[in-house]
Length: 153
DNA sequence: GCCAACGTTGGC
DNA sequence: GCCAACGTTGGC
Image 1: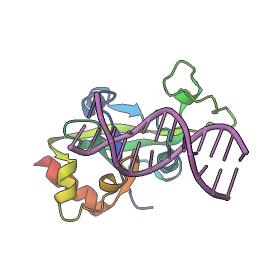
Image 2: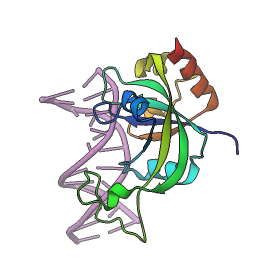
Image 3: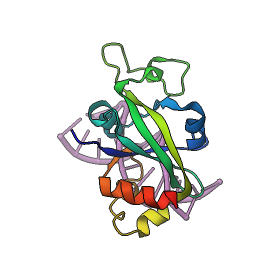
Image 4: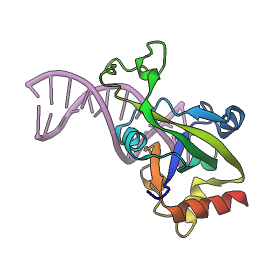
């Protein structure tokens, strides 16, 4: 299977690219959307590369790159009553929610704002420009490489 | 802070 | 299975 490419969103107030740079790697917990879950549970593979996107930021932008280091497994926060991500419908038999682990690769010297994605030839069709609420989404290899080139300045 | 878009829930 | 109500996301 060829390497795939993804875009994952995080609010920088919650978990930013700087947090990932500091931690080195992290588990992508808290996703509570079925389409996003399915991508993590079924399709993401070790070595896949990820555009790290800051949502609810000023401006919203792709700010760096990460890499998948562990494939889909149950999101334990769904079973933790203390967690803000607790889901009473999750169980041992049916974990309901899944996550992957990612590691820091690079932070862009020139973050690529959403407005630039919309204006750049070859990127107009990126899902982030239309399906703005999908927090884990596939991108094409071409899209990934265009964004990386812009981000590196 | 506002609000449009959209996903989920639950009554019927 | 429909659909109205509701909650959340996320750009602005």
